[in-house]
Length: 334
Length: 271
Image 1 (cartoon, rainbow over the protein chains, first blue to last red):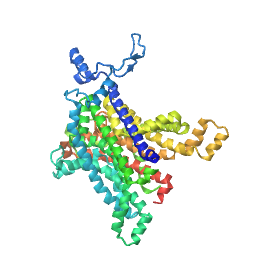
Image 2: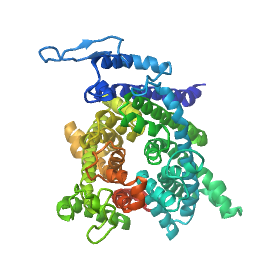
Image 3: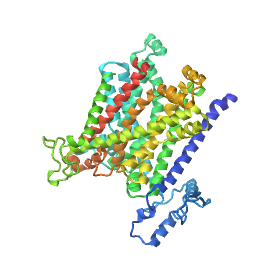
Image 4: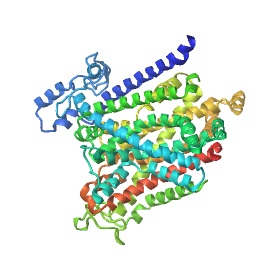
């Protein structure tokens, strides 16, 4: 019973506490970031020409007439700052209360609920991220295994150099290059938009390229490490074919660290999706963030997108951690 | 030193020289537009051709090296110094400062994507080179702090540190003279990889329109300007050359970082 608490219950509790802490920080950051906007958000959204009534109405509608936080240090008539307490009637608590009800406020531009905008775009981003993940795995596992099995030969060196180039070529270089080759020159695939599956290929390859490079290196070093283990000698001694040794035994153990990297890279994938979506006009969260949010200074939309992307990332990390523990019981004890 | 590290060092050396001597190397004015000279292919007069407004791409790539290296150097230097300082304090003293830094900051900051935080910050602050550098530093120092904290925790227990303490050395002396020089090696690797990361982030944010504003010859801006279909059709070189510049720079710093890591960690060499 004690060991149940020590090894199972407390680690999960601890992870959940960290999860809450991270979410709290992200929400706080996102709500307080709007204070960084130089000048008045109402002016930057409505423009200088709006009437005072329009400004007042806009501020009231979006809660901008309330104080930003529990307290502030406004300047008095002499220009000196002093402490002022505002109480619970502030934007920070209001955002929290609304958020717990599933409300992220309304878009400054279109007046639509931000949560609806996000709900429309979310599936496209997840589809893109999963497709990229799949492509990365399909490239990385065979390439990494071949490189690891032939350690030190020219095949290995070639795979390593290809992987390093993949890591160094960012999506915003690969993406337009792919558009040039496959959309402009060959006219095989559409350059942008999201309609049938053919629209998914170029964005997914662009987003998955860097990840596949990282994974290839991971799989390679994993395979090299595992090939030295005793069980490999046993498997060979009992006459298993080399293919069986590698794919049935080595890969199974070698994939454990790869799974962790996969999970950790999901965040990079989500951040990379922002850029990929912009390149290919892929209507996901990233495009919503960049074009509707940042491009049109719709700060509510920016808040919502940053929040949802962060939380997706954090949850993915937690799930990875759990899968990792499940795959490798040794970690559970230590 | 392996061959790839040497290649990396050569590329970086060339890059630094190009950045310093940019006004003498550039063949044309980086801002001069001339619509009658747009979309020209590479030639002896325009080494990399011209872009959609007739600007010389070669000169712009040359001046772009300045922006990239400036961002990389400032971000890595500030992040490394702040990170080392706070990481060392946390590792050496423990207590509440360690609880805040390793308990809160590490868990929180490393729990969500740095690029997203940088995008969010610049989105609210407004675009600009200094704001971009500021945002990259805010997310950058955490990695260095974690690294140094771990190193200090390890080195702190070594005999020579105990000896220094027994001889009555002050905390500052122990930390600066005895611990840090022995803890700093992996920092060099991290800094080299950090340069690659900072150059990439600058280009990415500029590409998104959140970095250096457009007329400036940032590589990210150049790619953004070259990627619409009509420009791609007429002048793929406008995309290719800044893209190559970014890739080579990042590759070079990655080569150096990888090589140094192998060099400093002999266990990896035998693999």
